[in-house]
Length: 296
Image (tube, rainbow, N blue to C red; front, side, top):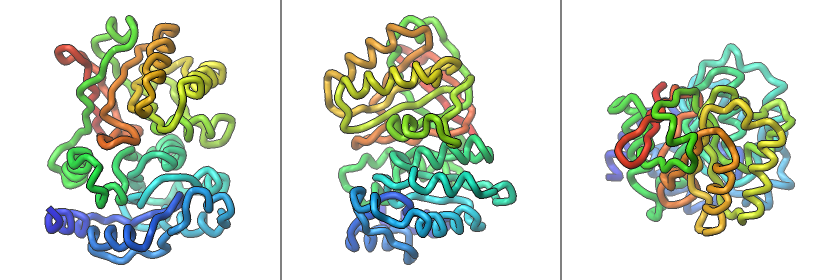
């Protein structure tokens, strides 16, 4: 398995980015061994330490990577920090930069959404490099990205979407451009130049360590801010093991006329199947459940 992954990463025109939280020397060494090359600008600071980091210094590193000739920018991990860099990002022009795929999730959501909307990049919300050396992470979640980037498949797909309201059950085929990711990151972008655009789009949402009332508050904020007014459909991923959260999601779905679905196939847990951002998405019924196919 290690040898096949080493060959796989060695043949990708990719660069490791680390604009959010870092990790230990041991984890960085494991990632370097996995991809077969040394990483520059290794970030070892925790999420709490990111509060005091020099955001402009971090931006200059990321800016060079965004303007490089690499086709893929793969995040080492998420955590915290990207929103402090985004004000510098939006002041720069990346029109003449070759389009890339940004891979990651969690705090990377803001960066992925901005470049998909502003410059048409097709990004992937999915396993970060740190996840590849984490034995607790699902191998299928990693393999699907492997198959997609290597050309073995030309689509990403989630299978077990459970309809949460009548609008979802009445619509047997829903089409739209896909967007979304981490709910807290998306909320933090409301009112900024990198605010999410959900018009005629299929919206993915997931989060971790949120209580029922916090989840309800954020979803109401989305409604009040008109984030959901013209969305084609909403797909909720995993929100942790809090049983109250499922009640909140069902209650929310019953109050709106937008098709709403739920799955545990993506999010901050062991299984985190990849999602295409700015892909063409098609939701359709497959037996008891629904599925979404995402193509470039």
